[in-house]
Structure formats: C-alpha cells, structure tokens
Length: 556
Image 1 (cartoon, one colour):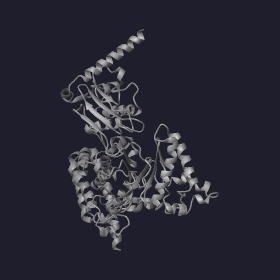
Image 2: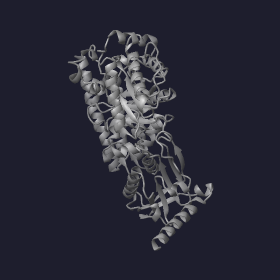
Image 3: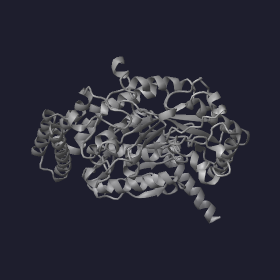
Image 4: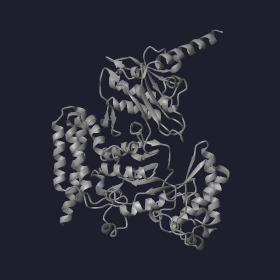
C-alpha cells in the first residue's frame, strides 16, 4: 500500500510539473532568457526520460560536461520522475515532460529523419530529436544550443575547440524545428571525432554501404574460378550468368537476416577496373551501365520474393559505369545508385565550361551534368560521392590548403534540386589527418549539407568570430584569399586531382595571404587565439615552401 501511494505521489508531482510548464502562453514562453547557471551556481536541472534513448543519455552527459567547462558549475542530471519543478528543466531527449510541453518528435527513422527541436518555455529548455536506430537528433539539438551560446568545434585538437568561460549562462527565447537538406551526410575524417560529428550534424539515415569492389567479396575468384571460369569473363563477375545471380542473391539474403530489424543496405559494387564480361548475354543487354542495372534489378526482384521492404541494393556509377544505361532502363524500386563526381572540382556544376573546353577533356562538368540527368531518368539516383583527396594524385597538395567553399555549396544546391538524398565526401585516403589543413573546406561542406541556403562567407564569418575574436576580420580575409584563388582560376581539375598548387597560388596571392596572418597575430594577445593563428601560420609556411619548390623546379 505504501509503495502504491509513493508511486501515486510521484505521478501527481509529474503531472503538476508538466501542467505548470505547459500553461504559459506563447508570449510567456518567449518572454525572457532562462538562466541555467548564475554566478557559478547551477539554476537548472538536466532532465531525461526515466528510460532515455542511448543518444539522449549520452547527450545529457555532454551537456553537463560542456556547461561545466564553460561555467565551473555542475548542472545535475535527473530522470523526469525525480524532477520537482523548482529549477529550470533542460529537457534532453523525448520524455513525458517533453511531450506535455509540446516538444514531441516521433522516433521514426524513415518518417521524421534527423528532425530536432529547440524550444524554450516558462521554465524549460527542450532539446528533443529523433534518435531512432542510427539517428542522433537529440545530440544535434544539444550541440546546436551550445553553439548558439558561443561554443564551437572546428577540429579534433582541443586548440580548435571554443568553450567560452562565463559565470552566468542564460538561454535566449528559441523556437527551432529543423530537418537537414540531405538525409545522410558523410565526411569521413570529421565523423571519426564524436564532438565534430554531433556539432557538425554529420551522419543521419545511412544511405551507403561501401565503395566499389564488393562483388569479389561475394563471388571470390579463388573459390569459383577454377571450376567455373565462365563466372568471370574477362575478369569481372559475369553480370548475366544465372549462377552468379543466384550466388549473389543467396549471400545478400543472409545479410538481410543478420541485419534485422534494420534496413539492409547491400552493396553490389563492380570491381574497380574495365575488365567486364563480354559474353553474348552481356553484350545483348547494352553498355556496361545497362549490365549493372540489369544485374541489380535481377537480384532485387529475387530478394523481393522473400524480403520485400527490408533491403536496398546499391552500386556506384563511376568509371566505366559512369555514363547512364544505354538503352535506358528503369531501376527496381529497391535499387539505389550513387554517382561519383568525376568532373572539374575547381568550378561548380551550375556553370559548366565552354563547349570547346569540354571537347578537349574526358572529365568535365558538362559530362557530369549530362550523366546526372541520365541517371535521374532511371529513378534510382539517390547519392553523390565526392573525392576530396587531391594529395592522392599530387603529393604537393598534402601541404597546401584547398578551400573552395562557395563552389561546393553551389554543387550541393544543384544536387538538392536534382533530388539527391545522400552525399559522401571521401577524405580518408589523403595524406595526413586533414586538420587543420582542410578544416574550412570540411566545415563549410558540413554546414551546407544541413542547410544549402547558406553562403561560405556567412559560415566562415561566424566561425572566425568564434575562433579569432578581435583577429576575426584578418583571418576571414586570409581564408577568402585562398577561396578566391581557386574560384578565379581558369584551370580545371578532374576526378580527385586539382591543378598544380603553384598554378593556383601566385606569388601575389601567397604574399597577401601571409600579410593577413601577420595582421591577425597583431590584433590579439589572447593565448588561445594566438595558438590557432600560429597553427595557420605554420600551415601556410609549409605551403609557401612547397610553392617555392614547385616554381623553382619549373624554371629548370
């Protein structure tokens, strides 16, 4: 009896707290900032559901830790059944309290996507997102709020973390309800660091399983070639051989079973070479792309018989499979294509080169937009794969920055208009870590993946204000000089390579950039800011050494 009474009291308290929080009008909800910490003392409680999602639990801990770094105060974390309603409630993740104040987000991977809410009321700050399966909406909400209070994360090194110190922390009136421009946002190097992943809102509804060269994992030559040479034609698995289709189907069906209840993303990527089978069956289907489409359709139809709605079969449209299928073939609804951008990475797709330039190279943006339109007609083009690894082709780019922010934002807008859902930036094959050398490129891309309406100047102005304080204007001009050098170049790059660095950064551009760094260092005495400027000065000095060496070599 006593235990039942206690539960009744707890439930009553919960309802009273909810009612008090929900009764305020819209005007009251937005009346004044909510104080979380005052003079180094906590004035709020972080409240989670009694059984929070793993993401909500992790996000509550991150909120507590970062607020402590900012203010020195430890804001306690409580389950909602223990919340008494006296302090401001920072509602992290879905809960009965969050639902009661109108901040419910459906936990539905396929319906809501990465949606999250940030909403303030009379006595609460709600940070609620979709955490279903691999989604991290609540984490995005927490880091979004922290960035609105002055924090920032621009690289894995703590030097590039901005955690402002203050004794009092207040949250202004907010009413934010957002979803990303792209369902899945992949930037490999940044996603290896938890704070960057969540602050940059990378990840999302997984839309890719791997690159090319997966067919040999399913139909290994060492297992089958001796007894069945007809399975392999000139080297690649024969895409029309009934036995090959049966082997692949059986393998993928087993993978679907292992991945339940998750949607199975199944890669049937062709091998990274031109040795496709040229048997009569294959040639009768059409070009190499048509054969890949025919093969993926056959496999998808076989899987549909037992696993409808549980899988997606995917392959990359690149190299010999870059051009759309000829003859045109509609893809099965469960087949997804990711097209590799093999065009000019110096200039945007929406401003292709003159036709006389396009006719002189096999990799250009005219070719890309033509292929893009053709793959769209198949009904299966869902993703874009970007090679951001210029140092793989030219080792000199390993020490020279590449920042083409506005160019890549224009491409994102083009792809968004074309119905693209997933974007993958391949960064992990380049020499070095990518940080801090390429942080502006990565950061602007990450922000654009969420909101394609932003400009590079908007994104970098905000970043520089946080990172550099009184030196922000000089540092922004430094990055703008680097960006403009690539934009103004009449040279072209293709696939993953860029023009030679000294052809982009002339001596005049080089010296102007260096001058902005000197001015930045003179504008501040803050040790943290000077450390970041020193990183960029060291980077630019290495770049200048490379540029000098390349110019000297060209004179010999």
